[in-house]
Image 1: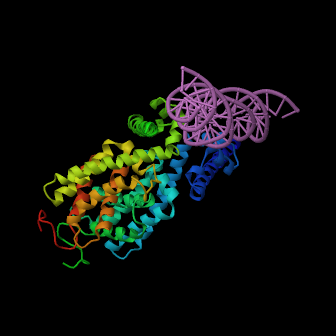
Image 2: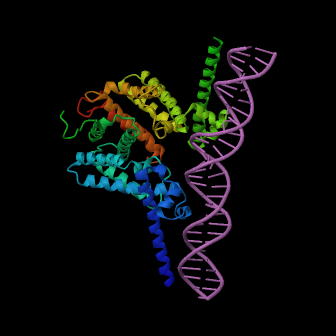
Image 3: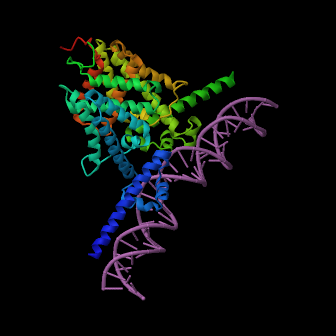
Length: 205
Length: 205
DNA sequence: CCTTCATTCTAGCGCCGCTAGTGTTGTCGT
DNA sequence: ACGACAACACTAGCGGCGCTAGAATGAAGG
């Protein structure tokens, strides 16, 4: 049994060090940008040598993917909070959309890890897709009451695309900075009200 | 006058070589991906040594930016053709949107250069913003007849965001591949018909 | 106390973007 | 026609990157 406890202790320490790596990578990226996140720098940050990184992750991409997964958990939590505290369906969608945009704006490095880098996130295994599906799920649940006859999945994906496109174009300087709120309102209007009749209560016709 | 002609010949040859560099970079990226576009490889491709690249461009980023500018000219031409050959306003927007999505799908490396890489494109000088503004202009003109009371600029930016978000999420595997057409249709519906009454002719209410 | 084995570290490989200094080539005045 | 010279492209190399093989180290078990 002595052996067992030693093993479990080592496993625990190993898991802690893995969290340390991911957290250090995220913080370094958020403070100095992903360019500053090199394996040498990251090793120095966690006070270990480079090769230990590779005993936890297959490579730098895998570390960034782990950071991205954390990011998906974060944004999912933000959207859940926004959705569950809203007063009605329309407000819920607006708040979730705002939460999404705020997340992308306030944590650009993390958002980049989630969408620009880390393209090959595991989609059909382990924990990774869980956080991702949870984030998408929040968008879907916010959209559900407003979907009407449209396919909920497709509608949510399209709305997601609208949000994602706006925040990415915004961050690369393609859109006028002052128009941010207006565009979000416009997007929400277009997805809060179904075009084919059966309009929402807050629209005068 | 002899001096003059020699100078002009050199300038012409220089300009040709610059085109050669940009074209080689684009083709290499489109055939083998941007990872394969290294300065050494590119130099080999154009049959010059590395330093000549730096006599034309400040660095690799500038070369990618030049490729991106070409891309904006391309996509603008595609959208213009789609728009001017459409039968009506709704069809025009649909065709322009389809042209945009097709471009992103068929030339992913080029699209990446335009939006993912090359973040610091010159926005207020020379020729670069011209192609970019031309591309945006096609979207705007397609949107104009359908803008109604909404701010045209903001509406176009929002629609653009929708398109851009869909194609980028699609390419990174975040969206169901089979839902592509459905999402595009959904997006077009939401932007073809203004939500507050005054519905379009092709919608039964 | 010593063996053994897992684990961590040192050192280095091939490649990257980029540049300083050298060599060559072609132009122009005499 | 030819030599001076300026412009230009090349060779060679710098520092840093992701990643890894093999040496060194430290703890567990006999």
